[in-house]
Length: 182
Image (cartoon, rainbow, N blue to C red):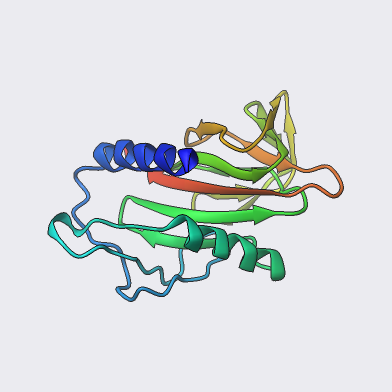
């Protein structure tokens, strides 16, 4: 339960930072939407009452992680707004290096273990979509072990990659915050 309180505090901080985003989440049903790495047709869960409070019970997030373990999809968008969204993810193999031009990732590890390789530069990556680069190799990055309860923030433009040892898995919740255009 302590992890959920940390996530709630993170969400408040991120949402406060995006206070100019009055756009309600896309969708509207209580069904949670699937996505690959980007939001598809996200939906939300809300509590009745003032302020349109969004609530994602730990049991739902855990179920999403369990469902991800059964399929080929590694991530599911849980909720989305114009300037931020939340993604539940589970990895059983290492990811490829990635860089997001405008998205900052605020990530809380929920279960499992991995190594986060970040920083440095990417050699040999390719454009995956507008402002998104994947593949190649991270050169001169920093490696650090990550475990349940760890929180890290990857600023927009910073290369990063999850590396997993054989047999390991990691489940995490990422709040993706859009950096305003300069």
